[in-house]
Each structure stands twice: as C-alpha cells, then as structure tokens.
Image (cartoon, rainbow, N blue to C red; front, side, top):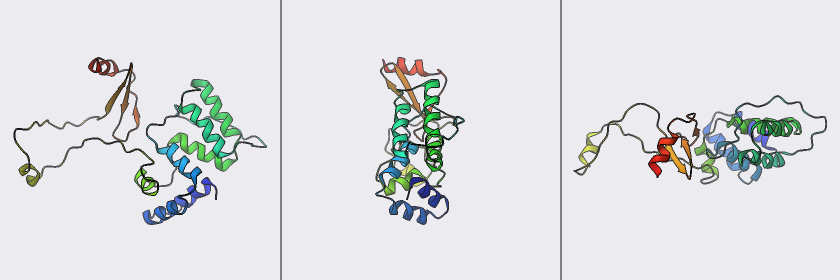
Length: 196
C-alpha cells in the first residue's frame, strides 16, 4: 500500500481507535513514518508557504522517497527563494499524482488525516518532538494549601506566549506548538542583548 492510500484510509474514519489501529497496521512502513515526521516536526521548515502552480510531465520518474530527499534540501536551506520554488515545482511535476498530493500536504504541514501528534507518537514513540511550555492552572484551594512560603507569583496576562531561542547571532521564536513565529524583526535585538 502506498502512502497516499494510507492517508485516504485515515481520512475515511473519524474514530480515534480506528485511526490508531491504522497507524499500528502501517507501523513498519518507514516511508509513511518519514512522511509523518516531515509534516509534523515543528523544527522542520520548508520556507515555502504556497504550493506553486505545476503541470505533470507525461512520464514522471521521481518516486516519493526521492521527492522527500529533495525536500530535505529546502529544509536545510541548500536551495532558497525563487530557486526553492522552482525546485518544488520540478519535484511536483515529476511525480505521479498521489505522490504529488502527499508532497503538497507535507509543505502545507497537514496530512488531512484528522490525527494529532499524540496519535503519531503513540505509534512511533517520540517521533514528533513535543514542545513543552509552562501553563497556568485554574485556582483550586487544595493547590494553594500545598504551597510553601515564601514564594514568587506573577499575574497571568492574556497575549502571545512564545519561547525565544538565541543561537550565536540569531533568534528563533517558537509558539506553544513548537512552530516558528515570525515577528518581522521586532524583539530579536532585545533577546540578543539579553543573551550577552
């Protein structure tokens, strides 16, 4: 069974138990596992937001595994900008239609299977990194009674929450989901100064 057929099988059911069983049935399929990872890994980015227009060639010669290798060049920034769009157009044009659909879904970061990263991680332990963040807890007296004084508290304000990761001279901002946030140059300098 090819990866596209597995995705269609997963799309066809809304039952979490059935989805889990489908994942279990295809657990040894390394190509399917790779597709799941390349789609949902929050630290992998292809730097292309929109699928370019493309026309299928009459005799496609790329297979899905080779296409995934090509996507790795986009993620590693070996190919960038317009060259990256041209490379993606080439990849999509030289695949059979089902495999092209899989690549489109990877770029869109959604396999459209109605399954979460948790479902994937139950099949392949820790395949998709979970990005931990500290969250607030609703007021409960029994929790208050467990507190040891003195302690530090702060008000919880509504707004955007993210982690800033400083690497040498660059700053990476990540949302609760682990997905990268672009603030168009705002705040990065402040985080660089804090890291000095």
